[in-house]
Amino acid sequence: MSDSVQPVFTVAGIRGIENRVMPSADPPLMERAGRAAAEEAFRLTMERPGRVLIVCGPGNNGGDGLVMARRLLQAKREVTVVFDGDLARLPADAAAAYVAWRGAGGKVETELPPPPEEGWALIADALFGIGLERPLTGHYAAWIESLNSFNVPRLAIDIPSGIDADTGKVLGTAFRATHTLTFIALKPGLLTLDGPDHVGNLIVRTLDIDIAEHARPPGHVIDTTLFRDQLKPRLNNSHKGDFGEVGVIGGARGMNGAALLAARAALKLGAGRVLVSLVDERAPSVDLIQPELMLRTPEQVLAQANALAVGPGLGLDERAKAILGEALALERPLVLDADALTLLAQDDDFQRLCHDRSAPTLITPHPGEAGRLLGTDPFAVQHDRVGAAVELSQRYRSLVLLKGCGSVIALPDQRWLINTTGHPGMASGGMGDVLSGLLVALLAQRWPAESALLAATHLHGAAADRLAREGVGPIGLTAGEVCEASRGVFNGWIVQANQNGH
Ligand SMILES: NC(=O)C1=CN([C@@H]2O[C@H](COP(=O)(O)OP(=O)(O)OC[C@H]3O[C@@H](n4cnc5c(N)ncnc54)[C@H](O)[C@@H]3O)[C@@H](O)[C@H]2O)[C@@H](O)CC1
Ligand SMILES: [K+]
Image (cartoon, rainbow, N blue to C red; front, side, top):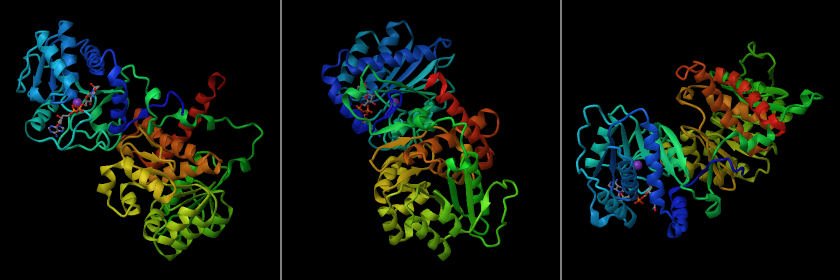
C-alpha cells in the first residue's frame, strides 16, 4: 500500500496505538492533541477576533478541550470553558488538564452561557470523542442542539460529539461541525453514513505518531495512487481486440434503460466492444443514441464476452434465473448488481456457485440488497456498513461495493476501503447501472478485479463531483451525464499518472 494513502482505524485500533505510544509519550498525547486544537483555532479565527467557546465533556475528549483552552489563554485569547463533569471521575490525563487550566487562571462554567454581543469567534466541541457509548440525551443533547444553531465556525475535536466513530451513526443527536480535527488517524465514522454530514472540513493530525511503526491499518481511503499502476496510456499499435469484449445482460420490460446505461458507460470507458442483451423480447434491436453497442441474445453475450455484468433491470423470472446460473458457471470476471443480487440472495444453489467460482465475482449492493444478501434488513446494514461489507465479502467470496454515503469496499482478504468522492445528487435512477458499466469495462480490459473496483467506484463519484463544480447538479444530475463525464476524468487520470516519467 502506498505511503500516501490515508489509513483508517476503528476505535479498537486507535486504542491499541494509544496504549502502545502513551506510556513513553513525551509530550503526552493529550498535550499534543490540545496544542493541535489550539493551532487550528488560531487558524480559524485569524480574521475573527473575539471569545472562543470550548465545551468539554467528562472524558479525555474534554481533556483535549481543556489543554486547548489553556494554550489559547496563554496566547492571550479570551476563552470560555463549559464543563460540568464529575472531577473525581475524570480520567488521569483529563484531570491533570483541568488542574493546569485552573492553575493558568482559567474559569469554568457549568451551564452554556449566552454568546457575547459580537458572537462567539469559534465554538469547539470537546464533549465526546471515541468514547461515546450510548445516545446523547438530557442536557448534553440540549447543549449540542444549541451549539448547532450558531452560525460561526464550529470545530469538532477528534469527532463530532454524537457520531459513533466506528459506524458514522448519529447517537441521539450530533454536533454539526464546520471543521473536524481528528487525531492519530481517520475513523470510519467520519467517512460514512451520517459522518460526512457532520464533520465539515476534515483535518487529520497524527500527533507525531508514526502509525506504521505501531499497527497495520485495517482500512484505507480510496485514492488514485491505489490503482495508478493500471493507468497507462495505450500503445499506438493497438486494435479493439486488445481492449476486451464487455457483456451486459439485463433490461427486462420497462427496464431497458438500465442495461443500456451500463453498456454505454462500458463503451465510454474504453471497452473494445460492448455486447448488450435486453431480455425483453420486444426491446429495440439497436440503441439509436449509441449505435456502437451490439445488441445480442443472452446466449451470444454469455459465449462471447470476456467480462460480464449481469443484473441491471434483469427481472426475477425463470429466464433471469437461468441466465444468472449460466453466468455464475462461467470462469470470467462477473459483476452482479440489482436483480441479480436479489436472485442470489434467494437461492442456495446460486450462492454455492458463487462461492465456488475461481474467477472474480464483484457484487455492488445498495443497503437494501445487502440486507437481503445477509438475511437481515437495510437498517442492520447501515448500523455497521464496514462490518456488513466485510461479512458479505466473506460469505460470497466476492469483492464487495456497499453503496451509499461513504461507499465501502470489502475484499476477500478482509481489507476494506472507503470512498470519499461523490455527492447526494447521485441518489437518482440509473447511477448504479453506470457504475456497473464502468466496472465491467475495466475488467474486460483485463484490469485486476481489485483495481477495477477501486477505480470504477472512485471515478463514478469523481465524475459527479466534477460536474457539480461545473454547475451540473448536484441536484438533478443524471446518470447519463455521469457516464459522459467519467470518460474525461479517467483520461485525465491517465495523463496525470504518466507525467514526470512515472
Ligand atoms: N486516551 C488518550 O490518551 C488520548 C485520548 N484523546 C482524546 O480522548 C478521547 C477519548 O477519550 P475517552 O475514552 O475518555 O472518551 P470520551 O472523552 O470520548 O468520552 C468518555 C466519557 O463519556 C462518557 N459517556 C459516553 N457516552 C456518553 C453519553 N452518551 N452520555 C453521557 N456520557 C457519556 C463516558 O462514561 C466517559 O466518561 C479521544 O476521542 C480524543 O479526543 C487524545 O487526547 C489523545 C490521547
Ligand atoms: K468531540
